[in-house]
Amino acid sequence: MNARKHDAGTASTGGRAHEVFIEGVGFWASRIPGWDAAREILTGRAQAPATPVPRPSPALLPPAERRRAPDTVALALEVAARACEASGRDPKLLPSVFASTHGDLAISDAICDTLAKTPSLTSPTKFHNSVHNAAAGYWTIGTGCLKPYTSVSGYYFTFGQGLLEAAVQALSEGTPVLYVAFDIEARGPVGTMQPSRGVFAGALVLAPEASHREVARLAWEVCEVDEPQQSIARAANAALVEGNAMANGLALFEALADGVERDITQTLAPHLSLVMRVTPAAETRALQSPRLQSVQ
Image 1 (cartoon, rainbow, N blue to C red):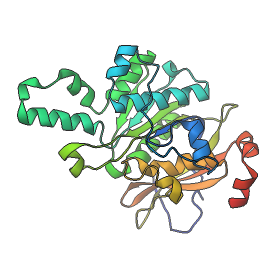
Image 2 (spheres, helix red, strand yellow; image 1 turned 30 degrees about the vertical axis):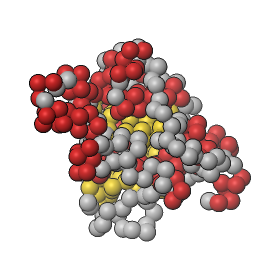
Image 3 (cartoon, rainbow, N blue to C red; image 1 turned 120 degrees about the vertical axis):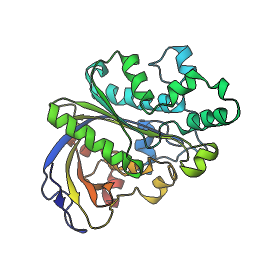
């Protein structure tokens, strides 16, 4: 796919080269426990909890596995399940894209510490959970899904690259695709090299065609830029996920919560951007609050 040259200050999706349709949303962050809470908190209708909330407990896993599952798996499975539930799609039938900047840095740090001190005690279970595609593996096993999945990491650009991958798959294969993005807190010496604070997880079901399931339309194109361009959430919302490696994905979820048309840019590389226009479905527009309309 060729990239169009994009100048700062011009209409974001002048070419409107491609469209996908968001059918379901899932979300979880340290102080934003779920998409229902996010829609209230991100629009200013409710206050975020003063302290981080406990991680979700994904019902998809058996009780024993649920207790042992690392944070990355618990978060990814929770938001993925909620997005599929909201869309009305059977998760067994959805190809998926899982994106994480670092994977499970807490487990990676624990393994490195064990290797440095008592290498013979390295845990096979921890190693199993440390691989980047662990969450995707748990998801396909838990749902019984035999459709392909893709595991993506793009460092600072992970959220946008994963979203682009999911959108391209939906259009090229002509089928809905589940997109899941997540990162957790970094710990120990590893955290000093690759910092990440709190937790952030978001999921979208993207479809290639409009339907009654549609929450919003996402018109997008890939553009060459002279300098990196990245949309950010409003300051009060950005503060709730500040420091997390996936925090730059919040602006898209904020736009979905607002229920008004908005242009969003995700950086894909130093001179490449994913430029999007988020347009809510008619039902979403009708439900937006008068206060939000006046603010916009």
